[in-house]
Image (tube, rainbow, N blue to C red; front, top):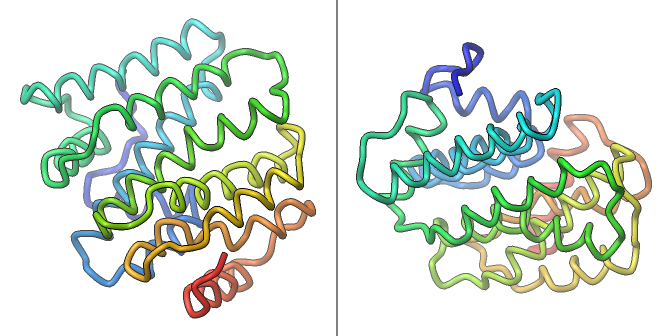
Length: 230
């Protein structure tokens, strides 16, 4: 799969700012440049997976795009040259540097196949989808930032954000009790790992169908970091 619109590797940060401003803002809380860059590479990977069901004209083409990214994992974990794509190259470097578990990255890919099915997700399926997409990303980001951090707290924070984003877009049914449960489970993230789930500070507002301005998002994420609560 070639993508002429893909940015140079050094511009992944700019890409994530453009397509995923919530998590980009949360990543500004990461003080160490290499850790921040590694987390941003994860967000760029997640963006590529999220695009697959949206840009493909049919389910088969979507599956081909997702299979392409699974092949990237094959190359990265088998120590073979990784195809020339900025996100693929960056992800391979993070995998090697951080010893990321392949199972979590595979889970992120598998979850996107559900989006190729036009049947609406049930509330239960939506929570599982959120855990396997935004939740898995947050779990990996927390591992990068603090290997001793609670993976379940990070997953819950990432899932709360992912779920509320889909509600905001009107793409799935909402379950306020499920969101409240995820937010409660997100408590306990260490200070170092907190940026991995700080975007969940926006989830309560998103669940009401409102999206704050860029300044409002920055304020809410900063406040969450100061209080340690999403």
